[in-house]
Amino acid sequence: MSKKAKSEPIQTQSPRDANLGDYWRRVGPLLEAIRRQELRALTNAEAVLSLGQLGDFALMLKTEERTTSGLAEMQRRFQKAWGK
Image (cartoon, rainbow, N blue to C red):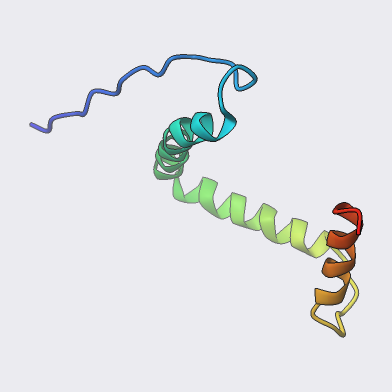
């Protein structure tokens, strides 16, 4: 017989009213646990279907072949965002 850990109910508090960092540090592990539980519950057929859909989506993303790493473009975007 396995013992199930009792989960403490978290206080529901609006992120606007709480420090966002503290809020996400508290709910992040709970969301991760839910995600892992959902993945474990997938059947093989559902997993294969999801992977197929992901592959189809990747094929729809027709991107040009990169000739650079994109570092210079990223730096330009950061400078623009930071007002430099």
